[in-house]
Image (cartoon, rainbow, N blue to C red; front, side, top):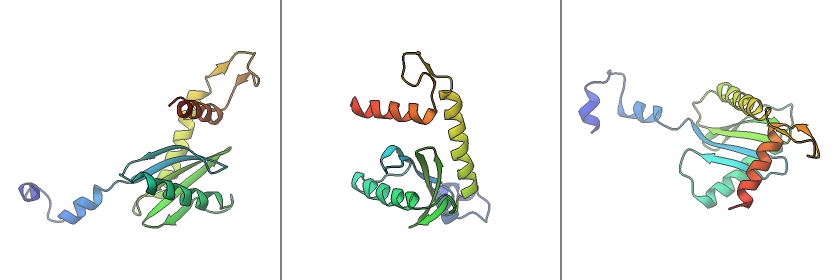
Length: 151
């Protein structure tokens, strides 16, 4: 099938270049609390369940062991980790080695802003212990916990 369309491509394109550009830029997306528990995970490449557990444990250990003064980009095996901490939640994105780390760092921030705007409209009755508006992190974690508990 490759030969069928190769005549339509510029001479600078070859099979290796095309397969390289089609690789997944984002390999996975994790939300982890400070205790190291994964609260949300999404993989964009097939990874076996037992390998996911090992990968998440190593990634979490690498991110949680770093201080706030250290860079939020980590080279790990054959990909990079970009992470950001918001309150008690770490958001970690695994990307390929050619992806722009700052773009992914900004993507994480934009994702958090969307969640913050969406969940900031949520209010609870006065009878609720904390009354009034709550942060999106707390609401998101409670939603995830309730989904996991009701399976």
